[in-house]
Length: 95
Image (cartoon, rainbow, N blue to C red; front, side):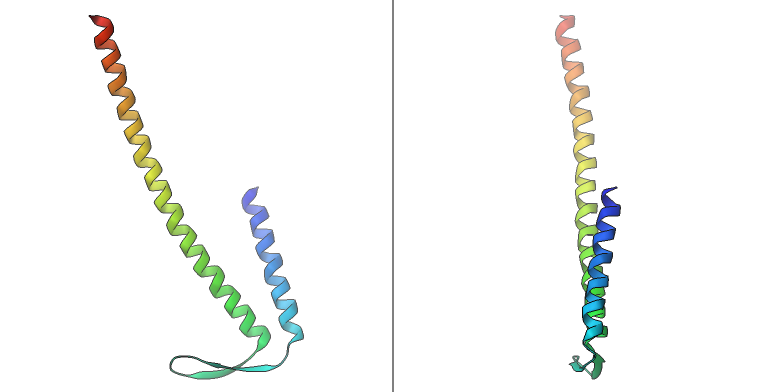
């Protein structure tokens, strides 16, 4: 459900960016490192929004994966320590 809400918000932002950009039909000169081109403001806004979205998704994916791996490692350690504690309790109660 949470993912659906986030997806709807992203789509709304994208549509708003396109609506605002569609009103700006002016050409803008964009200079890259090697070349340059003339783009409409609406296309430039859409392209930059998509690039930002992709970069954000990659960054979040990296941190999500890193956190999941840490969680798996900590769960393994926790299980191991629980087993050791159970063994220590059984040895102590056996005395």
